[in-house]
Image: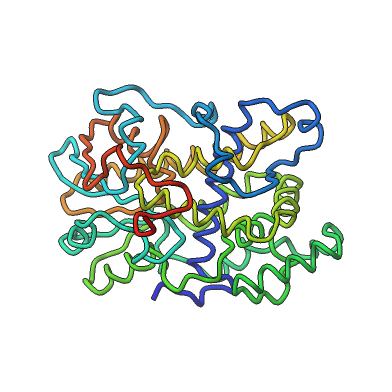
Length: 367
């Protein structure tokens, strides 16, 4: 459906994990603003957690927006708090054209996500689908090069025997039988482990692309493969390795719990909290703050700028349906705030009221 044979790591798993690492990096930058106790600060890893977040352990108030996220000039319609809740948005361009933007989540199956009712009908009437990276735009040789360590390098001497054993076991549990995982870049492996659950047969992004192809709609990318991978490679090799080690040290079931909570927030259209809730789980040391801020700038901030700039000319024509990760939509430097500052009038479609919030870890169907 979406080119699952591009590489040994299926696309839906790679994209899911990439989105999760982006959330974790942004959350780490937010958490870094609150200093740790001295005893913890001396030993805390780049990204760490001792136990899954429970409703009881969640903080009463979330830290402010990370300084690493670029801010855009204010505009009457650009109040970032307007975009913290909602997944589907109607965009009125300065040209008068009307398009739509869906914030997606790269885990879970479409039927689980409680999408606003107009989602599929709006796609059916669109004349173009725009996504982060269209499957057909990928060069297999480039993909193979970008996902692996340089020739002659290996993680065998950088991971302990116990860590290597845990790596193989957890990849196998996730449905990923990699022949030589020690030859992959540490951030790629960390992402795969963080995506946690067994391989989702069809993500929301997969389904959108499949539906567009059924309608013979053109599917267009907002970035290239090298741009997407480059965003993650801005994290220094030593920091990548620390992230992988920290990920391997997480208790069994940690990321499964995180994913369940993320899905619950998405169902409740609490997109702003997809980032802020992560901050409670991943305290970082003072030494890790610069790395966290840099990762956030590359993975979230720079890509937000890129997406907003490239969406503007596309949205000058009617009938564009765009879909990008929900974490890219929110905040002062988010895509929606940037589009609003550029003169777009933006309205939410099918957003829930602020009453009856979804409890983290549950869904409306569970109540």
